[in-house]
Every structure is written in structure tokens, then in C-alpha cells.
Length: 153
Image 1 (spheres, helix red, strand yellow):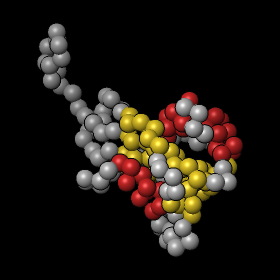
Image 2: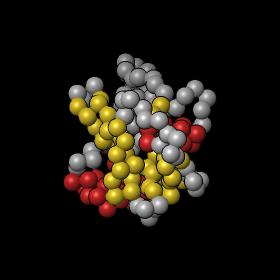
Image 3: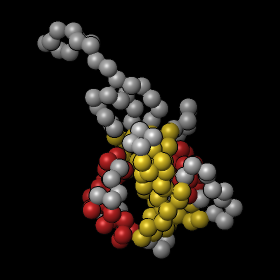
């Protein structure tokens, strides 16, 4: 690649599907989360529900699908887009789409996924976990920060 005013250089990056993540809050002010083993870090991680956008799938539809698949919660009000972010400008070519879902409701017919453990945390406890670092997924903390800065949670 040649950047303006510089000699050609070799850069390495990874092309992969976009990520989609949803920060959901129930009517009784709880945040649905997921706990799952992440081989890349060789430990369990607590995260917001989300996943990879399927080919041709609208990011908002991915958010709704992933929230239900991983936690059993359904969207009640329209999603609020928190933004589209560059996860790692030096290495990754994809984007992170973030959404807020408020007043989500649990579907009693939901079937648990085997690789994901759903958790619920009060919004107050969740904010403490973000502050003290026990919730430490950097990209997901970005979505929480945007929601806080916009006065949405």
C-alpha cells in the first residue's frame, strides 16, 4: 500500500464479518448478559449478547436475533443504534454495530444454547462491574459508555 507522500509498505489486516452487540435492559432494570468460554483468552468472559452478522443480514436484525438466541429476551421497543465502530483500526477490517434495547421481555418458550450461560445483573450492579473492571470487554464497555454519555441508561 502507498500512503500519500510515503514509499510503498506492506500492511497486514484480517477481513471478517461485522460484530453486532446489544445492551439490553429489562423493565425491572436488569441487564441480560452472557458468560462463555473464550479460547483466545483461555478463560470465561462475561459479555453483552451479540454475535456475527450473517451474510446479507441487517445489523439490527442480528442484534434482535442474538439477544433472543443467547438470553431468551425479545425486543419490545424499537432498538436505539448506539453507533458503528472500528474494533481495531490497525488489524481488523470489520465493524462493531451497537444497539440499546429497553424494556425487553423474556420469552417462556426460549431454549438455552449449550455454549452460553445467560446471566442477569441489576443495572446498578452492572455499572459497578463496568467501573471496577470485573466487566472488562473493551468493545462492550464502549457501548455502555456511549449509552451513558447519551443519557440512555
